[in-house]
Length: 435
Image (cartoon, rainbow, N blue to C red; front, side, top):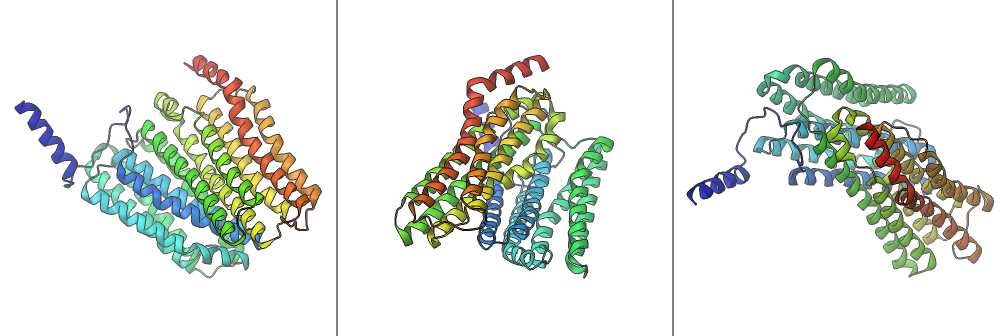
């Protein structure tokens, strides 16, 4: 009993006392490693940023600023997603939950909130033909990344076997921050600024692949990475539900419950559930723990996936705004809803192909069948009118709106049903052959 008591006391001391601990690296081969409460808290701030970007996207789409809104949205989603991905990579390799690590993580969360405050100005500037980058977003982004530089240098000092790759990560992030800051400080025209932002983004994405091939890998855990990405996907899906609820609540407060409100509410829930089901059809953790070298391609597919999921919520906000104001561009709404849902379906297919490495063409008919209702939704909206607006208060226009939403939702549902009926057999066969 004394030994049990001593063991319990030691465990409690380790759990409750967040003293400074060695950052010598975690076990990359540990099975069943799960996310910590700190990591989950960290994720919540990022979902707030996703939601704020989706709100701005919906607002500017409703105002007709389609091209500029999409550009600003892509910029915001990349900035937020890439910062999250980099921290997740480090946390998987070296997260030790001591006081310094906790404080550095909280500081990064503050940076996320500051960046979120800069999103309205970013979208407005893009609508006026200016760069979507601004000083507030840069300050927030730098605050998000500078603590990570310190953490990589700390790991380099305490993990001498991986010092070169750790220092390389710190230097790469530092150089990138200088570049992001220069896009705001330097008085460049819009086009060169946007090109520089694109070059920085591509450089940051390419650097980890090149560095780890040449200098070795930090001790990141593939199973832990899979869980972290899956959890953020799940929370982002929750943003679709929250966006649906908020949009319908605002609509019913002014107009009361109507067929349009019911359709938007039900379709938002159906789409969120279908996207969740489709995403978790892929046994990512099992596959990555077996073949961790496939993690890089898998993780990059999530950058557009996070944005596509959040954009579904933005489209539903556009519909609610149109119903509330009594007019809606059905064609624009159909595109705003169908494109991100199609992106999610295609990215699920591509992620499956990357992980399984089977590129099973038998999935193509299912993929085509899932996308067909989305094409039909856009075609229906185009038939009703590509330039004019509809009045959801009129029966014919309301039927058209309901039909568009139903067709898009049907595409996501078909993806799930098709896999449950026949697709899973191809997954099992492909994995069996790979083994």
